[in-house]
Image (cartoon, rainbow, N blue to C red; front, side, top):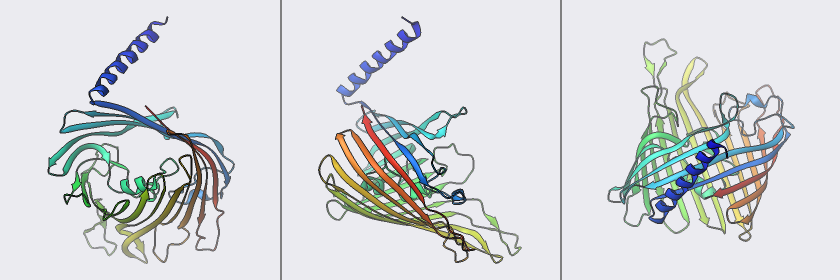
Length: 363
């Protein structure tokens, strides 16, 4: 038997034994999931790359198999007060230097439970408050990200410290405050940071609404009027979400956001704020434990200025979901996106992608 193979086998056997003993005393847990598709780009405009954050990238007739996400997670309960999470992610957009599927650290944080009554303190690489609740109500991340994540408005992770918990004893009102680098999973390279605030209201069972805001501090910009001073150039985001979900029955939700870059637009020698907006509405219905459907419509305009044309788009998704097993979902789905015509009257073909998505959890 090959010596290296023997060493690796012994390592995994010993690791499994340690993991099992930890699980028996409720100390540690390994989990993970994967999703990917067979896809076919039926329709594409040759100039589709002109659109920032185009949801349906890739050329016409491109097709193949892709793994869009692989998660491997280890949760460890240090004590009754402290817990930790370490998560790796692999996907085809995070490639290595030789264009193979890359792996990076998605989560790495320490949680201090009940640091004071009803609140937890979290340190490290962790989720941001922007769309965790809307993503949970949407419940179909394996099909697509929620709108602010899809359009790159707010990163799903940040290296940060945060406080989250309930304001009242019943947990009808919850809060989440975060101070982070504002650089996602990347190391901090400058002095500018991001500040997040989130409130969640759950007045009755299955219904929830959230109010969110953040400010990402950026370097100032020069005044176009020649004044020797810097104008603020920060990114400010506001969002509102309303959702209702009965698990394995149905769900509906609507989410809207305003994303503003202060003094981020020069128009007729005047510098002013650049505003972008997005609205997303979705729903799902479960016929039984095996079959369900889901649909979603997004509107996104990265620049609402009257002089900016040819940049908004309408994005739609529809899926039929089949669960042959509790941990496996197979989903034929369609993604369709249309685009505003340009200021010179030029129109663009829509994007149409057909997919069969496979989603499965393990361990």
